[in-house]
Image (tube, rainbow, N blue to C red; front, side, top):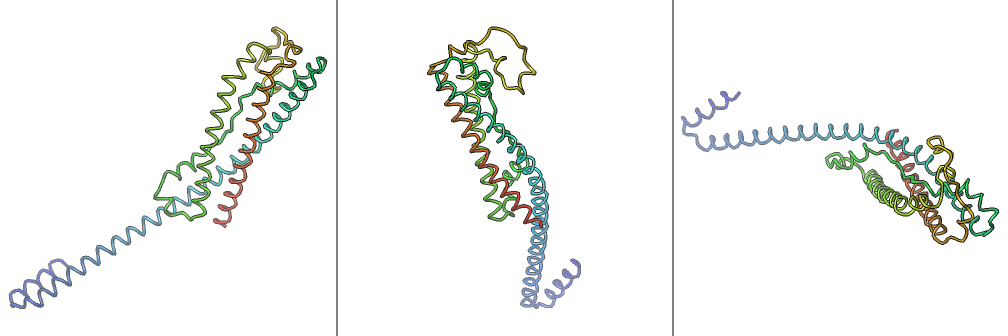
Length: 248
């Protein structure tokens, strides 16, 4: 084909038909440009199709990811409900200021000695959020849910740091000096412990401002955790419904 076009150009030049040669040359350039543009469009179309396929694959993984995390969050919400109940009961016992009832702290104050953080596993969501070429294929609604997920992942990280710092800097040191943890630990932790050691003097905990504030601050923290869990659950359930409707 190239030899054919070259032969025509040479013939036009030999016949001194420069105008027709020029028109022919321009036409040939036009055809080459059109060919390049078509090739680029085909390539772009293939890339868009590839990106759509990758996006679809990622969204399928995110659906499974959301289902798993929803179950985990529902369990964590129930755990927080139990902690809140025990912490409130501990404050009520301290508030009663009755020595005989202080022994009841033994089955409740273990909620204070916990360092439970919110656990989320979102590798596929985080991977998608880092891939702009796939996000460009997404809808506004998908972008909204991904932005919301990013916000809550950051909020969870901040909450978890605070929970750990509160426990390490305030709660655990208090237990070291005033409470035998093996006696008051929650049931799910006692299997790892050995019973015995010095007995806790629960009467000495009466009218203790430091302990009162420790429990109060812990109650505030766990309640805020539960609110955060509920907000995340709301977003994830809506996100999952959106993905299910989109793939229907």
